[in-house]
Length: 294
Image (spheres, rainbow, N blue to C red):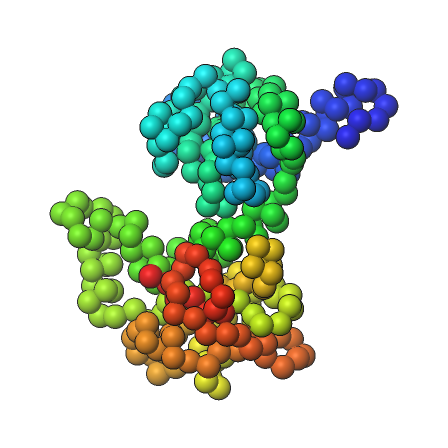
């Protein structure tokens, strides 16, 4: 990415990479409404509108990946020193950042929440440390594909404000078995007692055909929903689609109902694309084509 101007062109390209949300960087929401990166890292009135998403695209060398960040961050990145789903303020190449141990692709990874002024030097430090390990920039289509394979939910596609954690197979994120009070607890308890009227289901296809979302989901000759999100899974070499399935008569959707149907996904101007059948649950895809939510 270097042309006339040498280093100046490279810096401009890196700024564009970070500012447009491409490669290793992503643009955060409105800084005025952000949570902890804006308030606890940048301080009142400061600008903290970007973060680096640092995660491997292959799980074959997780130790090498941890070694990359260990050269950049001034903290212990072992499982004991930095457990999964925790975060802390650290220094990255001398810059204060918030490191968050989680990954949208489901493998070993961190998010680095970085003040805007520090984005380029932190990015350069990560790329320099990863050069000998083969670290490269990856676009968000790659991350989307990997998350589809993992079964990680996508906000605005798999999850919307009118979807519940129970319908999306995310009951494990709610403390329904504990006395802890939380917003919406009573509604979830009522929904669970009455039975779910829809469930998020994951499909893989026998045919290698592209899907783009909004395709009709057919079960035993009846339309029971539509595809919310679709992508190609390169690890399993199949097209993956997610959508909510309903019972045509409006009754509760049991796991037996989901698993027992003969499914097909409709494509524009073509015959529906048929899939295999599986009893496995999301997340995690196996050889089957229908994976029911938990």
